[in-house]
Image 1 (tube, helix red, strand yellow):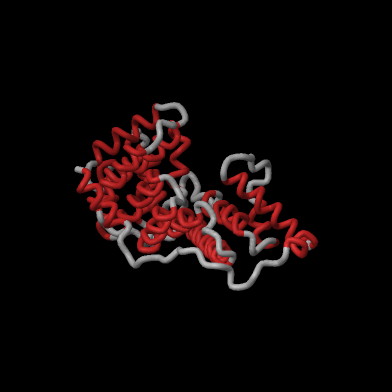
Image 2 (image 1 turned 60 degrees about the vertical axis):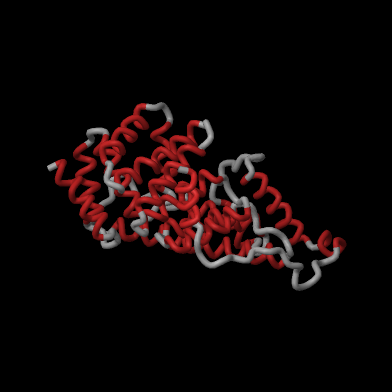
Amino acid sequence: MHGALSFALAALFAGPPQDDSWTPATAPPPTAWARAGARPWRTCDAAGRQALAIRLGAQGRGKFERVWRARARQCPREPDVLVLAAQEEVLGGVPVGWMPEADGTLDATIERLDEGATRAVELLDAAIDEAHLRGERAPYEAFYFRAYANSVLGNASAVRADLARALEAGDAERYRIERMGAVAALYEGELEDAVRLARLSLDDAPVEADERSISRYVWAFVLDRAGDSESARAVFRQLRREPGAFGNRPVVESMLPAHERIFLRAIEHQANGEDANATRLWDAYLQRPEPAEADRVLAQRHADELR
């Protein structure tokens, strides 16, 4: 069993090697005296330390959830500020809406989601490059959130490459890497790898209720796509009954392209007997141009069950 799981992980993280070795900065940094006297540097340095404290959970974000996007423009060479701004782009992106409409509103929302994810990749590349220029490690979680943004864009090959770098750098917990790897495998139709990685994520997730429920949502999502709809629906029904678990579905949605978010909502509603909502969501999904033919056939089968 362990051999098969190791093989699945190896398949996930296969790809061209990424050299993230440290190198000295290409130019000597300013002297401590010059840096201390430069007010913009002092302001951005303080912002960087605050951003790191927020990302590590040592300080709350406060009321202004999206202030870091503006600070990234003010401090374009402060790696931790750039990473936090990228997090805001992917985690605080425009919601698809509870019931997506077919009047063009959904198209505009998807365009904005893609723009935000693209900006996140650009911010993270700038953070990684700046850290490399300084001869430092890439900021914590930079590779993981680059994978996150590429997952929103549906770019499976980039997700896999980013996750391989994140795994090598110890950039995120293994169970988080595994569950995003499961989603990337789904994008490419590699159902066996998706099931194995989703199960690994479920087994490796900590006892903390939120993290386990997030991994269980991914597990159910993968099970349905792999053909075990009954088991998937049982998990969705269990999650709906558990206090607080349903609130974690948006966390799973945030790592998916918009059409996959609609699919997830549709199967979750259908599992819980909310047929009218599920029917409307399946109709919205089937009107999208993005789904692969196999996914479209599965969605049509689910929709036909309701009718």
